[in-house]
Image (tube, rainbow, N blue to C red; front, side):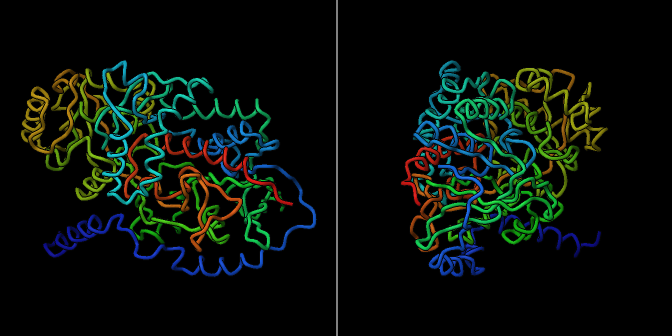
Amino acid sequence: MKKDDQTDKRLSRRNFLKTAGSAAAVAGLAAGGIGISSTNAQAVGDALPKKWDETYDVVIVGSGFAGLAAAIEAKNAGAKDVVVLDKMPVHGGNSIINGGDFCAPGTKLQKENGVEDSPELMLKDMLKAGSYLNHPELARMVAYHAKEAIEWTESYLGARYTKLNYQGGHSVKRANGTINSSGSEVVNKQLAKARELGVVIQLRTKLVKFLSNNNGRIVGIEVRKNYKFPDESTGKTAFIKAKRAVVLSSGGFSRDLKLRQIEDPRLDERFESTNHPGATGEALLAACTANAMDVQMDWIQLGPWTSPDEKGFGDVPLFCEPLVGYGLMVNPQTGKRFFKETGNRKERADAIILVGHPVIIMGDSYAVNKQVVPGRLKGAMDNGAIKKFDTLEDIAGNYNIPLDVFLKEVSRWNSFVEKKQDDDFGCMIFKDARPTVVPPFYVARLWPKVHHTMGGLVIDKNAQVMGFDLKPVKGLFAAGEITGGVHGAVRLGGVAMADCIVFGRIAGTNAAKEKPWG
C-alpha cells in the first residue's frame, strides 16, 4: 500500500470516530419536513372508516418486553379489551433473542454477591455513558424503578435470575442474568400472563398508519392482516379502533439500512446487525407522520462483542461479555492489547473500528468455565466462531500474531490481574479474576455490528408521546427502543430490559386510564 493510501485510510478511520454518534443540529425527520406537514394535517384529522373492523380499549403494537408489559398492566388497570399486534409470524421481537441481562440496583443477587449499589449510582453510570445527552427525567425513571420492575418479573411472572454479570461501563456488577441467558425467560412468561388475563395476540398484522380525529387525537390504526414479512404486497387492509389509546412498542430500526444511513451514512453494508429481521423503522415513521416528535435518531449503537464468524447476534456476545475483566482483548496484527476490555459499548466499538480489522478476545479454562454459560460456549464452538487451543503458541500461529510480542503481552496482562490494577488502559479487573495461564484457551474474533438505536419518539415520564407542537399526542403512548432520550449517546448493556419493562408498565397503565372517545 502506498504511503498516501495509508494516510487516507487512517484519516478516514479518525473521521469516523470523530463524528461517530454526533447529534444532529436538527432532528433528521423533522428537518425533512415531516413534523411541519403532519402538524398541519392533524388539524383536519383523517378520514375515519364508516365501520371499524375491530374495537379495543387499548391497542398495542409490538410483542416484546415493552409491549407485553404494557398489555398486562393495561388489563390490570381496568382496560376491558386489549390487543397486541406484531407484523412478524412469531412473537417477541428482539426481546426474545436478548441476552437476558436485566440491570437493576439493590437486587437479591447483588446482595448475595456482596455488591453495594443504588439507584443514584445506576443513574450516574447511565448519564456518564450517555454523554449527559439523556433526558434526565427519563433516565431517572429507569434507574429508580428498575428494581421494582425486575421484582415484578420475578414475583408476578415467575421469571428466574441466577447469575450476576458485569456489563461494560457500569461501576459495579448489576446485570441479573436469566436462568437461560436469554430474554425468552421473561418474554414467554409475559406472553403466558397476558393470555391468562385475556389479552388478544395477533401476529402477521402490520401497522400502516395512525388515524386521528379532528382534535388530533389518535383514535385507531390502519393495518394489513395476514402480512407476510417482508413482502409489502401481502395482507388485507383492516381498521382497528382504540377507544382509549394506542401504545407503540415496536422496537428500533437497526435492520433498516436506508433509514439508519439517513441518520448515519457510515453504517452501510459493512456493518451487519444483531437484530431480528423485522427491526425496521416504518412504525416510527408512521408515528412521525401523525405528529409524533423524534429525537437523537443519529445515535446508533454498535455492539463491540459480536463476531464476523457468525450471523446476527450469535453466541459470541455471551462468551465475550462474561470475560471482560477476566480475559484480554488483542489486536492480532500487533500482538498487543489496544483498549480497556471493560469500556462501554461505544468506546470499545470505536476502538475496534480504529484498528481496522477484527480483533480477538481470549480466556483460559478458569475464566471460561467460571463465567461463560456452557450452552453458549458449545453453540459458538460448533459453528466455528470460538476456537480452542492447547497453548498460547497455537493461538499465535492460528491468527498470525507476532509470537514474542504476544507472549510478553499476556505475561504483562497476568501481572495486572495479580495486582488487580491495569496500568496500561485502566480495565476493571475483578477480585476473583486470575492470570490467563490454564489451558485449554478459548478465543473468538470480534467486529462490531449495529445493535441498538438510541433515538426514537419523544416521551415524558408518563410514557406519553410528545408532538412537534411540543404538546402531548393525545391517545398515543410509547415504550422501549422506539423511544428516544432515555439513553443519550450510549445505552449501557443490560439497561434495555429495565427501560422496556419500566416504561412498558407505565404506558399500559396510563393508556388504560385514558378517557374513552366516541
